[in-house]
Length: 162
Image 1 (spheres, rainbow, N blue to C red):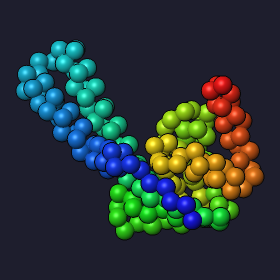
Image 2 (tube, rainbow, N blue to C red):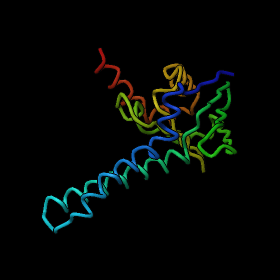
Image 3 (tube, rainbow, N blue to C red):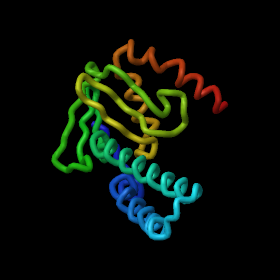
C-alpha cells in the first residue's frame, strides 16, 4: 500500500485558507459600506468583493466534502482519510470508478482533479506528494472505458510539454 499526503503548507492552505481570506475581504468591505454613496465604482467594488467571498467559500465547501489529506492506494482500491471532517473515510475500488475529471484529466497542468465513483467523488491537487506516481497508478488501474475518456487529453498535455 502506497500513501500520499500533502505537505504542511498545502494542508494549512486547503484547511484554513478561506478562514484567512474571508475576514480580510470583509475588512475591505466595511469602509466601503460605511461611506456608500451609490456611485457606480462603489457598487462595482462591493459587488466584486461579494463575488470573491462567495466564490472562495463555495470552493472551500466543495473541498470540505471531497478533499482527503491522506490517500492510500493498493492494487484494487483507494482509501481516503483525514478529510476536513475528521471522521470521514472513503474506500473506492478501481472497478467502481466511472469518471476522471479536472486538472490533468482535462488537459490542464494544474487544478482540482476528481475521481468519480457510483455515489462518491474524491478530489486531489497536483501538490500531493508523489502526484505523478499517484496519477500514473490511477490511470493504469481504472476501467478501460474511463481511461479512454481522458487518454487524448493527457497525451495532448504531454505533447505541449515537449
